[in-house]
Length: 304
Image (tube, rainbow, N blue to C red; front, side, top):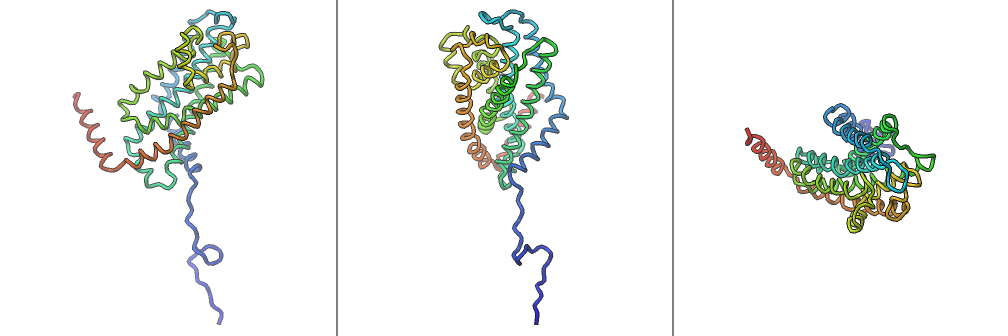
């Protein structure tokens, strides 16, 4: 007698039960990132913060009408290039940690513990969100500056290529580092206070708003450890004329050193971000989340 194999419609070829399908973390992260990006575009309060930063840069460019000493390059162009670097830096080192701390307080990391591939997908989503924010801010700054205050734009294909790789490496240097910082910051109320003071100090000492050669040598050396100085220098090389190299400490753009330092920070950030986020997720529990919510409610009710 011929035997008939009865199936329920779910068997895989060969009679084996089908393997459960699992969405790859990068794909899930891209989908999540797209959703978060749409939410950002529908949030006027968030968008106004980025627009205000661009407005500040444009006001400074209008006020400063001198040239960079010894170069003939307008000081306004140096400020626009420096602010472009600062805004990329701020998105990764200020905005991203605040987002992560806020979502941790809301229980996002607790949910990731039960999600296969949750941490990598979460990082992909946040990276997509931050890259989109940074790219839009950079395009808005350079475009409005060029239209309204005769701001700088890259010169030729080489300038555009330099702008692209410096921006990419700069984001790779600060986004993972921002994720690592966000994993260890205590809460959203303290995050901004803890971040803004060192970030503003780096803005002043990294040559982003005035020539770094006007600062003491010790300050220049300290600033050269951090990525903002090299991001600003790399963007200046893409946006300013070659004569502006005279205002750099080495008298040149030092693009190989720009690439080396930013790559080193990118590697360090990736080495720190994933384990710190996993550690933060492991430490999350329902009782911890409830305790934080009760504490937030008490502190919110106290002033009233």
